[in-house]
Image (cartoon, rainbow, N blue to C red; front, side):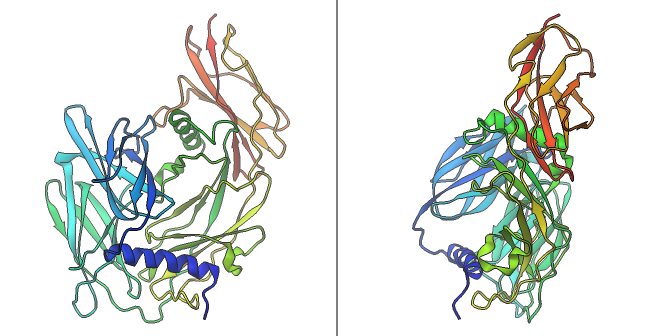
Length: 450
């Protein structure tokens, strides 16, 4: 039977996984993007990031990096930085595809004297060691991953000691094995997994799929500077504090994206799940059309997927569904996946206008300025956020307004006293009626001189 487009998508991903894991010949080049953070999720600036024998770079002001011209296959992306009087480091294993950018290289740094490791073997039901199995350790911000070698051996380094890490080992044709590993600084924790044969088991359907859509300010997204990308992420976290807590692929988009749709669902343990298939369509139940498949997320611990397709268009409604891909997945028939999740829809708002009062860069003398902006069609409410300095992920806003109902397009500043000579940055976020669509204005500034 000829595989449909959706099953081809997963089949190619799984084939590439096995080829790379088993030492297949590298034939192309790709890119690797990601973020370097500390244990609190704060970006690490100026960290050295490299792949041995490949590219090397430094993280910019929001902790992001881009490595180019990397040979396809599984690669260890390493990062290090001198913070205070200690050396910090971390590593992430990623899969690189030819002519594509891998965006899940999220590296968590911690002091080298506080790091521990997990190692062990993955066995089949007969005690034989499995080559090419994936082992995930669910950390506070992302999943660390390893792939077993021909001896069934894996090792995950750079894990901060003092934490219990949920771990899962998976391989096509086998049920997952879940463990919890307590990592101790300076020690290696041994964890061995034993997989059993998957015999007709079907993974559970993802539950409570939700979509939140962001429209970025036009004019900065297609070639956003690292500073502006950092500012946008800081603004999004003020609006949605949960945004920083999801374990998933990185949102880093070196090319920039006008629209971002964040899909989230409830995470539950499931020994039959290899990963997730993501569908997007222009009508409800997109999973009923195989050609609507847009991604195969190969991480059984994930609870988020960020759709950053450059073709996403404001004021167009998109429908999403997610399926769990099981150990018995058959690329020829499509069997071995769960039923589709509930529908989640997203209708991006248009970009906010560029008008502001005070004008961008103006000097004002009033301690309680009236802040004005262009009205946005489709907006239901607005929220104004003001920062004492350029927005950063670890900088709380000085003041946020309450909800301003459309069509009102102004609000009087009522926050803490403005300081003479200080430059303030402010932004307006427009919300749809249900709050699931948000549009961020350009970032404006003024200087107070009474």
